Image (cartoon, rainbow, N blue to C red):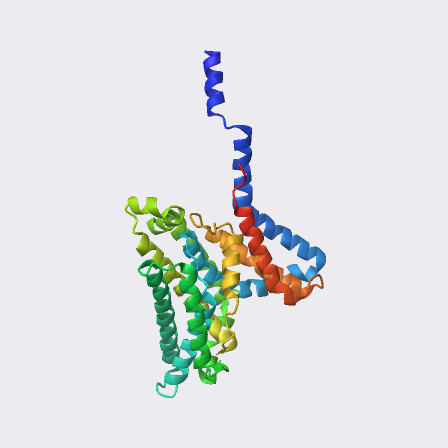
Length: 341
């Protein structure tokens, strides 16, 4: 009896290497971003005490809100095995559309709030339609996401340059005064962009983790053929992820436009890099199949804190922010590679 019990225990107990592998995946995959965030806060506090001041952290959080909202949509796209390189140009196109429509309707319609609502609606429709075009070209046209979104990036950036005639599009001053509270006001000292960002993060995590759509997104990214045999509508799921990505861009720009009240051909440059970097740093697999919206939030905060730390210290020139982001993305992808067997 003792020998049988010992044999059964030996068969069911995981091997030491297997146990170590499970422990490593749990810590690096799930807790890794949080550990990195805490380490960065401690390092910043040592280098410059103002780094952890309430005012500085509020500024970092407000700066992270726009990229974070876009990165939530990117989490769904990447989890489904796709990529969207057009989000920066899409953001500029959305802002340009809102400003052009608002400026056009201001002399015609006496109600400024109605004009702003119509401009925002136009921006949402145009941006969401752009995401639908991306999704249709990828799913129906069977073109690689990289090619489709790269082409869309060039198209949208050129359209913004054409709208602005190579310069800047400036929001009407009367409309801007009415629109300003969307960015500068909030609740209990927390700005609306931060509130919307955190609310969308909670909703996104719930959808990705606890709904049929979220499970199908992960299944499609994990194995497309198996998903298709399991009656998952692969094309529809991928199409919806690109529409969702565009919707998130529209939400971010709705909150972003009253901040500066203008849009230029340079608006949103490298936002796609920041959004994708935040997603990958947060633990979402670049090849798809696993996504964490809460991890994306942490990843975006890590990038913003790195940029902020470079700006308030003399360790590295702030002009190297882009280089730092690129290096962080490469390191994060390397850490996701499976170990040699």
